[in-house]
Image 1: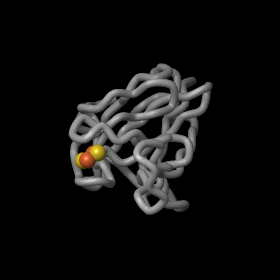
Image 2 (image 1 turned 180 degrees about the vertical axis):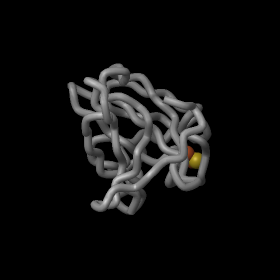
Image 3 (image 1 turned 45 degrees about the vertical axis):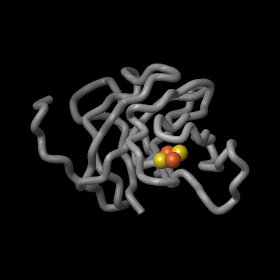
Length: 121
Ligand code: FES
């Protein structure tokens, strides 16, 4: 698959990523960009999650943060977010949430591996 392949959106609104589900390792961030939206994809307890790479507190780049046990810690002010729910874990803040995106895993055409697709909202 070409690195510069143009991403397409299916009829359900999910965008191709070119990233196979098998290649995504636990607690490892995979930076992506779809339609100018910087995202991070990772695997937690066997499930794949996608979330915004922009910190909801003050827009720092979460690609420079620390990912550990389903939590991402922002590099700027060290706020911690639960990737599964988007909730802010530290400090307590019910209004500030990490943007998460719906993930679908489908078969790549002509290949045995399954491609991760993401729906932008
Ligand atoms: S910008 Fe991320 S915690 Fe402040």
